[in-house]
Length: 406
Ligand SMILES: Cc1cc2nc3c(=O)[nH]c(=O)nc-3n(C[C@H](O)[C@H](O)[C@H](O)COP(=O)(O)OP(=O)(O)OC[C@H]3O[C@@H](n4cnc5c(N)ncnc54)[C@H](O)[C@@H]3O)c2cc1C
Image 1 (cartoon, rainbow, N blue to C red):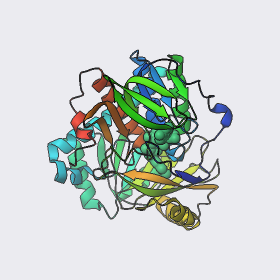
Image 2 (image 1 turned 180 degrees about the vertical axis):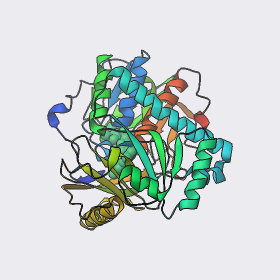
Image 3 (image 1 turned 90 degrees about the vertical axis):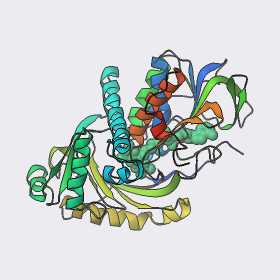
């Protein structure tokens, strides 16, 4: 029995180059104890490793797959701060001040990531983009105006646009929207590999394939054991295992479902202006972005079951559905896909991740970026866990605790 159940995380062809030559060869199993062992080398593990090695920690990453080949490869990688659950809705659960605090922290995680990308000179097709949140069945025009007020009161950079302003500014069909700043698009696999390379230059090891089957407390640290019987002692361990979550530790409020995406051939964009990243205030929602090589990516049409066989059987229908509904949202006659994929996807009741030490096992941390902003949540987790390991916990840490729902 593994610590985490291996899942069929994705099927189909994603729009990012899956170039085997870009994947680093696995390092030998680490010789000695390390400060932090990170299980999982997707975008979450990569951001953690970059941050922790920058602080001088000895880090070992372990993955059962090649790096960046789990959920990260399926990501459409809109790097945004507005979460799946609107701020006005979140305020009903947490109260206005607490909801605003959570959103501000997520916003600062995006700015933090942008700062690190610039400081490290990472490329990964990182681009600033306007972000448009279109009226839908979750928030109509009136609801969007209220959401704009709540965001403004929280000090967040969003404003309401009328349907004619959306049409005139972006060349999209007229539909009310919120326009937000501080959003970015990226190639998620390239970002992950660049972050891992940075961490390795600072001495981190990246060992794959190796399946971690158990983590036990020993003394004031932990011991990891692999399926092959290798062991590694570490001061702390972080489970950055994505949707292959350690169910012994991650509470059931964090659930799995399925998501779908298509991409046109390169060179089709632009069909609208400024490369805006677009999504709908709807449930389930549709979203769209462009890539550096001019593909148009449309995703969404989520289902709340995670069974991979059932998910994959739906892909041909979902592909046609995304082509049709994407064309409608973007105001073009036809949207012909060049590739399509189906993937496991994680959600949480407030659209926010599970980050924090395991209850009763303080040397073991969870970094589970459930929710639509998994890339942003990786930046958030890196900041929160780095602070936690330094002995000066982040003042917002409890907002993202895995146990906040009880
Ligand atoms: C279709 C789709 C679209 C998305 N779009 C966006 C978006 O637009 N914006 C956004 O921010 N987020 C988006 N996300 C979410 C985001 O992609 C994910 O949150 C993120 O990629 C998860 O990264 P991760 O590193 O946590 O997981 P993964 O990339 O899955 O990495 C976890 C790794 O852990 C390894 N592992 C697990 N268990 C073990 C073990 N026991 N031993 C060794 N290794 C183990 C796995 O092999 C895997 O490689 C999207 C997700 C999907 C599926």
